[in-house]
Picture 1: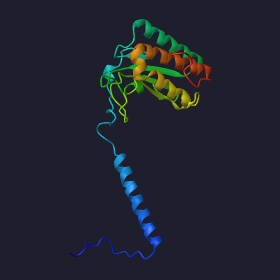
Picture 2: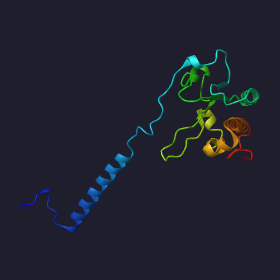
Picture 3: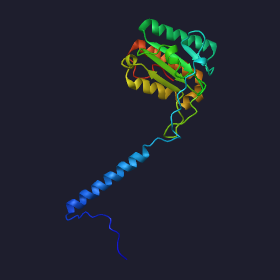
Picture 4: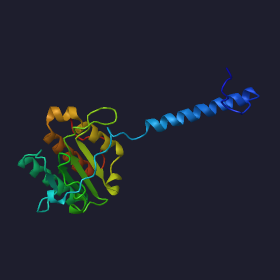
Length: 200
């Protein structure tokens, strides 16, 4: 039975054969990477929400739609935020939500978010990341000017330590919010933090 001709290119030397093998391997590797990196519906980011109707009628620096905080805790958080802004000019804003029940993008105009603003978004974190690990409840949107004050190591550790599901389950989501606010407000005034400035 006649064989099927795969390629008309003649490979006359070992060097040419090796080059062809390497070329084919590179092509195969690239194809594999492209396949792996294709976005998946399972891990797709939630669609953006823009619901100004869920914003409070009066201006406030804490929006607790999910009712994570007690009245006393909310008052403490507001006091810390006001002290930070008065001392440094940096703005910290807190949004407690349960997606998709959130004002979402509407908070940008409501709070006049700029490069001096940190928006702390606290969600139930019931989703999972690409590695199948439960999502953190703490998410930070850090303005460019604020990002220069503290090393990225601080923000990463803050998010991973206070926002992980194990800490929230042990301490409660309300404590996670209060401690995150305390860490941010202290460190943006101290300007020396590389890690959370208190024992967990």
